[in-house]
Image (cartoon, rainbow, N blue to C red; front, side, top):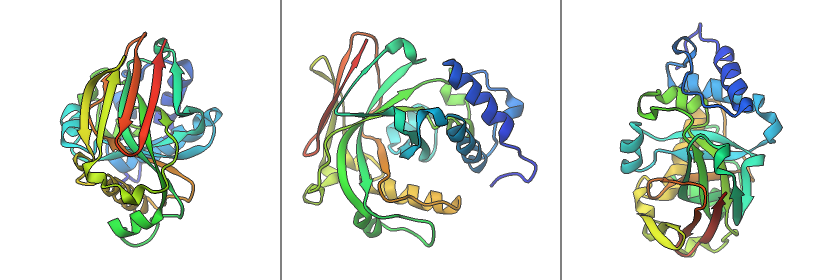
Length: 263
């Protein structure tokens, strides 16, 4: 719930200024911080518009969808952030490690929607499945801009897109309904050596349950998912905190792989 006297603008302006400057936001003043998740999403919408030079929204990321990730972040439930077009890469990305505060790579499944989802009523798993056109192997690029993120505050993390910095999408997989998503294994390898593993079932029991959660959360905010949007469904393993010189390969069985080079 949003306080009747809460003005999200000062917090959004503060975050936007530091995002334009490429500086961390760990010093976000306490008196500007949103206190509830709804307030965090209100700030996020203004930050999205304030970063319009990064292009339009292309969809959403959902984070904190596994018990391991919730434990790492000290976040009790999933959270979402919009994604700008400038952060999208196809199949491969080459990134400058120095342009991030602390860059991480997450192994994920991405869904591309064929039809809108949410906005009225309760969305279930069958409706979510019916709304998906393609799935993609994907890597989310995250940036720890928060210092002690475990105590930064969930609403404030939401206000800044919940770590999101970009996405690398593999080729679309139209025949994804033939794949048991709960049994999909995802791996994050560095220079050919697997560092992290996870399973589809680790993501809320089924990766598409993440899509259900997001559609229902947006409905509560008076919004919905739109046709053509991309939704990152959450990392199967924990993030890999990358460094310059790494070549990171994210692979999801049956869905493909993407690569990221860090300079």
